[in-house]
Length: 161
Image (cartoon, rainbow, N blue to C red; front, top):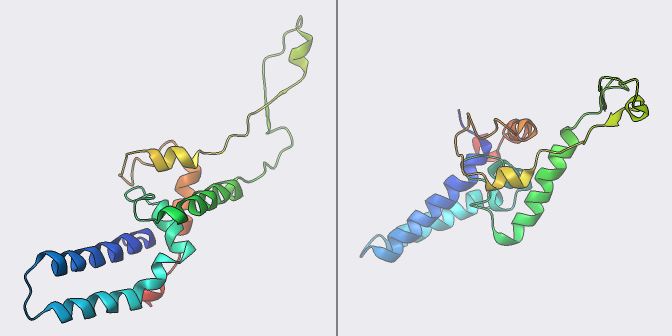
């Protein structure tokens, strides 16, 4: 299965490898070919490096996270991921679902009042700093990030159409 978040790292790696061939090889006749290949890849897939959807999909892929995202784009993408996680938090249907039930003690008057649960977001920062690159285990403790990953990777990309 191909993921949309793999597109940007793949294109970036192709460009890097072609530039490395040009730099390190002693090409005599094929240098113009390498130049044309680099220009063609950049022209065809240049939008990938500016597409917010593609950047978000790459950032929420456990294998790449923020590795292929430019420094000036990282803060914006991290904010976008945080917004996605917030958006995925659905309000509960029952009015009492936001409260924790504690056993009522007859002697303690404060036990009558329910305690509000801490409404914690899955920490995007935790996901981005985790070293686990496996699709199976990277989201084990971050269910909202798993949903963001699924949503971001359902986006079709223009190069596949």
